[in-house]
Length: 286
Image (cartoon, rainbow, N blue to C red; front, side):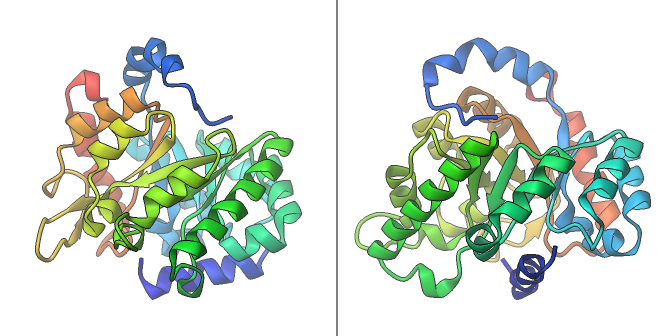
């Protein structure tokens, strides 16, 4: 994640469905999920357009064919106006990214916005570097996540964490991401698997989806050029086998998928290219 995005979340912090935990519950819904899949966009990709004109941006997203969006800030719009804009575009927003600091200090404000807009997931996508230095740090973070998960559960939504690459740099013998998975309660804390960042960090998305069914309720889809550069690319432009990955996601209980590109040259061309590739996949993967 770039400094720009950390700054973006910091600004967000200053402004204004229950996770599946039983793998046996997944099998009956897998085929239906694959047949009924809708694709979404993480609106951070389109942040410049959103800052200029929210209504126009959401309309263009819907015209491409997306049916869901994930917010990363509301660009100073009141929650009620955000909901109206979504309704006009024919979109829903099941999820929103919030900074860890905001989740810890301004939960009630975030919750009111989530209720007004219709979010079902509140997602923290970044841990400040000073809070993730040691194994004990990650244990403490897991308890913070559990506490936030309890607050979310009482409010009728789900708290989730979105991985970066740093969770796969070993501390001792294990990647810290495994510590978070082991020390957070599956009934309280869901996970949003970012395929690119996990791949960049040395993790295997297929392995995690297989080993932890029910923990990953959302995916972020962005491609990689592969080693050594691991350039971030639009979906379908790199090395990741998306048909296989989406099938693995269905088996693991994934409910929502969001296309993202952190620094696209042309944001709308980027989300169009990703949608075109996803739509070209075999029906079972769509």
